[in-house]
Image (cartoon, rainbow, N blue to C red; front, side, top):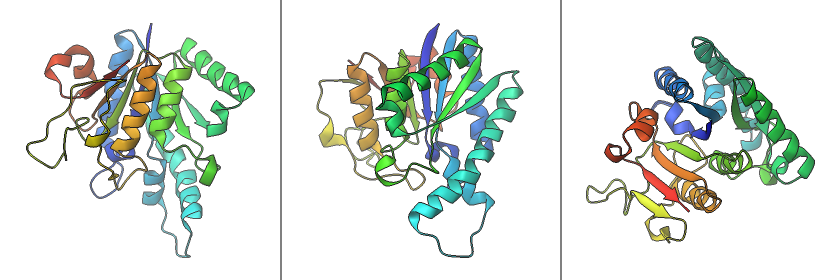
Length: 254
């Protein structure tokens, strides 16, 4: 079976007001189920725990940035996984939670345990849902963002394709807000596209196009095809694999 990793950012999973977009999550789950029906093994790397947590609890006492992150992600991860559990259960599919830290990819024993965990899940038709362990990962223990985590996961699991879903169509050759800018359709790992990268980040997540470009380039160099696409586009995952010539996205190849 072909193995793919799909990373979904917080900006895809939330509305403009910062609330969890249940309709969008449900649509993405339907597409992931469709990919499985087409013979793909699917690993989902999902942000959104912090966004979930903020909608559940109003804190009266002041919190610093680390305390706020730990609190909202701790309670939000429960809600996020419950959403995925409920939505995938409607398709008679099981999901499993994989919370990880950067050091899990740096120490051999932890790396092998993490890989074996996801392998046995896939062998038993369980979809791994991967996220950073935000309650523990603070300061130097943190991944840059879940883009980095998705690239490391794709490499570890030998994925054929990594799809990074953001809130824009791909890598532009200028400011995405400029009507004259166009999406760069294909990027080779040796191409230097840094002059096109915008430094701005979304309000919902830690990453930005700079992070996605860095992850995509490194991952493509290992032989995994990487696609950056707009997760808010209807049927985007289906279209990437069925109608690639008619779908707008950026593809990175080695």
